[in-house]
Structure formats: C-alpha cells, structure tokens
Picture (cartoon, each protein chain N blue to C red):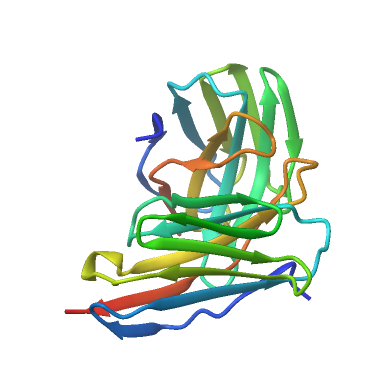
Length: 111
Length: 112
C-alpha cells in the first residue's frame, strides 16, 4: 500500500467552478501537509502548508486536514483557466527528512 | 522565485556514461534534496543533505551518489547511467526538516 494515495484524474471543470482535490494516507504519524501546483515542464510550486488538523485559507484556496480520517483536501473557489495544472499533495511526519508525495491530479479549467 | 538553479536543464546521454546534475541555491538553506519524478510514481527521494558533507539516502538511491562541499551546491552523480534513470530530476531546499520544500525547475535526463 502506498503511503499517500491521490486520484490522478484528469479533472475537467468549467471556469468559476469549485474544485475539490483530495488525498488519503495511511501513516498516522504524518503531521505536516502540503499542496503543490505544477505546470507542465515546471517545478512544483508550494501552494499551502499546514500543520496537524484543521483548515487554512489563502485567497481562493482552502486546505483541510482530517487526521481522524487520514484525509486531506484542497478546495479552489472561482476556478480560473490559469489554475489548469497538476496538483500534488505531500506530507511528512517531521522526522528523517522524508516527505511523501501523491502522484498528482491533473486539472483543466475550461474558459 | 526560490533561488534554486539546476543545470543542465536538458541532457541526452548514452547508457554507461557518467552524468552529474548540479543544484545551486542562493538562500543559504541547510537542507537540500534530490527527487526524481516519473509518471505513476510521483516524486521520489533519491538523496538529501542536512549540511555540508552530511548526506543520506532516500527511497531510490541505488545507482546515484551525491556530494555537498559547499552550502549552496548539491551535486547528483549517476556513475554509469542506465535507461531506467531516464527521468525528470528536481532539486529542493528547505529551512528546516519539517519545513516547506521549494523546488527548482527540473533537469530532464534521457538515457539512450
């Protein structure tokens, strides 16, 4: 079983839609959770960084962590064509310099 | 811009040849990482460094070695490249071992 599972998609939505991206994990020791956006042929760009459970909001982006269910989500409100990219989740227990990544969800926002 | 430069950005080489990829940072961060990204596998850690001359293996370290003689430079070497090492390689840096990872633009390596 992989440490982190992420639906690869692809996901296609109309402009203005609310997008929900999700990851599940198996290691209850994970405490640090991240979401990255990766445009084609570019490096991953950090979007959100959260510690432990709860919500964090930054503009149109909201990250949620539910440690009891081992489930994290990224919500994008009022999606824009510029949001079209692959979104990667990542997490860490905070020991051993190990970050575990999902395989990414490909998102296309149609104008 | 996280101040990370990877070189070369693209390289085509033949099986059995040595290859060195360079990561240079201007942030003076302590932690540096090399990942490879492949379809269906996501990002996998090859090696990381927690200081000058301090390195350790990651999940997929076989066939790779690293060196860090200066804070700003982290080198990844493939001693004898194989076709299975065809991949996109990303360097990343972080301030602390629990902190956010910042990635470079990637080095695309093709081994024929």
